[in-house]
Amino acid sequence: MSILKKLFAPVDMTVGKPWEDILIFTVPMLIGNIAQQLYNTVDSVVVGNYVGDNALAAVGSAGPILNLLIVLFIGISVGASIMVSQYFGARKREDLSIAIANSIVLTAISSIIVMIMATVAARPLLVLLKTPDSILDWCTSYLRILFLGVSGLAFYNILSGILRGLGDSISALVYLIVSSLLNIALDLLFVIKFEMGVSGVALATVIAQAISAVLCLLKLMRMKDLFDFKTQYFRLTNRHGMNIIRLGVPSGVTQAIMSMAMLVVQSLTNSFGEQFIASNVIVMRVDGFAMLPNFSFGTAMTTYAGQNVGARAYDRVAKGAKQGTLMAVGFSAAITGLILLFGRHLMAIFTNTEELVTLSMNMMRILAVGYIAMAIIQSLSGVMRGAGDTVTPMWISIVMTIFLRVPIAYGLVYLTKSTEFPGGRKESIYISLLISWVLGAVITSILYKRGKWREKAI
Image (cartoon, rainbow, N blue to C red; front, top):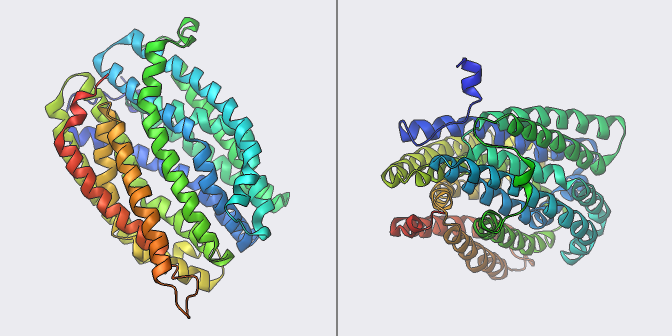
């Protein structure tokens, strides 16, 4: 097998050194996640520099609603990835073929549902969140364009999840880099040349995501040595379809709960005015890069655990969980250190307003330690999901968001109200997030060690 062909071949993670398998799988995915993060980041940079701070606030305010309304895709993607990795590890070709086909059908159905519902609901939700009138129209047009083209986002997430379940993180990386570069070029063309504002960056994102989805589909259609891409498998079956839903629903619910919590906190953020909204956008964009090692290792651990649980190699799962978590913590600490050192330069890319850069950097310093805690949460939750236990990570997220993050945020804002700060201190938003992350890491570690996830394999 040639080096190039081997590079793009699926990785069998049931053999070899666990840390080496995880690292080889994670690095290209980490690079891919950086490319994906560029979608939203470039949108923000372009509108912040060529349209203004209010346009930057508009793009950011739309984020929580976007995340809330795509939870169906999150669920299908997780369910499909778990089933694919376990069937691949167990060497069950027909089950693998049916699972992949059923995932594609479910994605098509959910795309239509979300496109219709979300396009109608976008503006009412923005009004409900007390989005300032100065950015309401921009937010609405941005969201509606994204939801009209939501099938590209949906199919890329599901199909790249299937590729990762098969151990192929390289192909998804290459396709994502291609679409990211296209997204950057279209952003500049639509905003600077055609002066389309926030609508231009939304349209650029839709086109780029659709192309990445098509590339993933073409790759899967060429992987005939692993599974069969036959018409007969595209009929939804009770066993495979329901397994995808059963495994995916808790992750979808988790994302929905987190998004709803973000919406509740976004309402609190909006009460501090346009400048703090814009600052929050900058922090969340940089936060997205700080989180990349955590999410990448979390996804890698899901695939690693899924394949090894499918092969019934439980001792190997435990060994890989320890090694993978330690690597995730190390990567996260390094990235966080770089952001603290060069954060101001990163934030200055988004805006020329010095006060906005200073405010954003102060908020970022509060979150710094929390990224180490998130490395633990994502890695161990990834192991549990890969084994088929998607319910435990769901409950952890519920506790972190509903019982910790939201009450602490509102409580701190209330307790810090004074003559100088009649609306409370802005730092409360980020302190609440830090506390929820640290406590979430403790809870996740305890539940992982209890080992109930071992009983959940499909």
